[in-house]
Length: 156
Picture 1: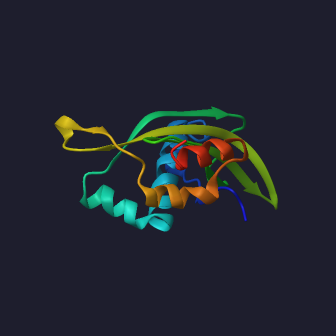
Picture 2: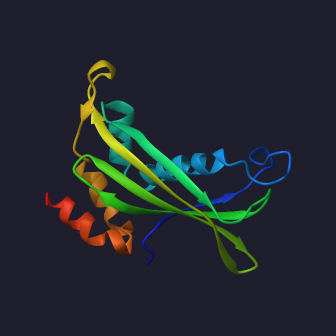
């Protein structure tokens, strides 16, 4: 079993710039898409809280470092893992891997930090990461974050 959640994607023309390589903002879009698909697949109850209740997942920080270019019709694996879990925040790590001819090439890495919030828009306050989300994230903990995630999940 892997320690990451994977989103497969085929790069389209609309995601490239006039030179033919992928425009940088798409890497951040793919982070959001991966996070959303994770909720659909692994934590539908949390997704229901976002859609029907007052849970909000605020993106505090998103970043990406690029190592190689990718172009239209490249097959991409966006691999998300849990880097850190506190009482109210989650940090994800992302590996962007090009899949070609049975080989994998790391083309970029990114991070995203989110905060769980609740309440009306004019009075939103930090909220604990829902237990169902903590449970869904547990299998996807990165090796270096393992102890941090476990200790914070138990209140430590």
